[in-house]
Image (cartoon, rainbow, N blue to C red; front, side, top):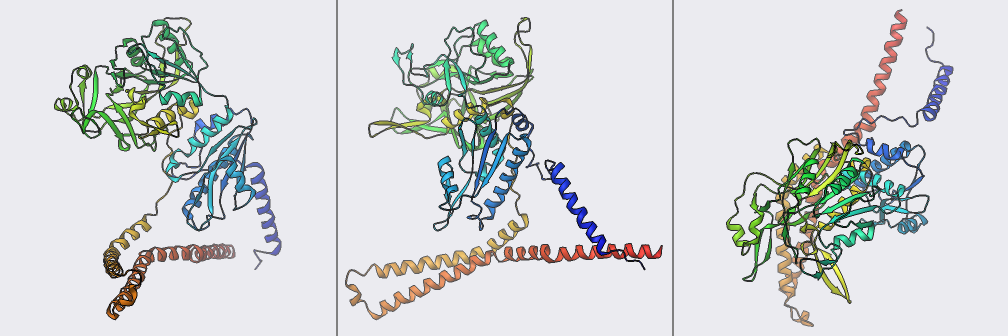
Length: 601
């Protein structure tokens, strides 16, 4: 019988294998297939468009303490996903993204480089090395951007954070923001009170980071190159102003709107009577009820009472994280947003745009007439007239999608756009200092200390809207961490089994330590000589008992992981021994069947 396999055949097989790898690395190195659930290594179309429009090279430096995290599998697993995604950026950028992977070992130049970029080093234990896990970037002008530390709980926005860093490096000029408002946000003289108001902290944040221009009340046009139009309780909108705003939106301009049925705080009390603004918003697909304000029994804040003490104000709300969209890039990870006398918005029935709520009330909310705020004597009277209804009301929303012009009869008008980007909030007070910061005088300086996330919400939203439409389109990618369901069930079962023992031992330990402390507290300086033999023996017994209990407690806690470790051992055994043996047997079986078939032929 002729031999099927000869040394020459094995040589040819080896050569073919090497040639295949060479061809694959040469012609198919950028070809990837993502079979993961949720396509976690696949870039969205927005990011691909962003990368295709890069004009200048961007250098990315991924710092990860690979050596220092050998015993931290959770971080290493996340770091692997981050690195794979960054490599995908590099592959899709047509050479414009240059990625470097750096392990900043202790006392190395790489660690100094990480510190110089402003990355955040985290010490995982009292005696462990500092761990770096962040991203720095530079452009050809030596501008820098940084993501100080990748946090696993923010993984749903990983692609957005990376793309935003790249966008800012590719567009280093300060963003231009046009502001249209009838309120003294910049500290100008208030025509109502005839007093000079201090600048709002939200406005100060804008001027520190962006190129801002406050439009005059009678403006007829504004810079179409503005990255954002910010409208805060705007004054009356004439037809030519409405046309300028409409065409700005038709050209792809982004708009952030704050309107309020009743503006509170200082001398700025007043109601909303801007019918032209209501018409403009309705054209965008947003209905704003200027005659109603929201009350919410679940989220009411306590305010000072005229009679002394404090009382819950049903129209001054602290909106908690459950009512804040944690998947939107502007509102994720925010815990509290304070609003006062807020109205509500909802989509119009004929809207061509898509309306997405990002801040809402609870099921114990209801509406009150805005006009009644001029007559009520205090929060108690407000509570007496409040009746909750089953509806939840939207305080903040994102609007996107196709839109046609509000002026179809004007020949010079751009008639439609594929996608608008508008965010609207039905409260203005949320931007005012009194509702989200406290000021303190420290060393002769006024220090602002936030007590809610209003400022973060404002800057996050502005930061999001000043980017390209491709960047704004990036939403949550879902949670990538895959739970070990069997391990979790084993852990829950083990904890149920051993919790009673642990609690009993903890109680014994506490009792022993209390008796020991009671005896030792009787000693004063030099009193050791007057302790009786029984007391000395009791102290020794309690000390030994404490040591024994702590030992048993460690054994119980070790027992919690016993089943999990056993499962891990079985999985390793399957991967290392059983599966390879099975595959080997299958190969030999296939060879035997093939030889038998040829012999029979």
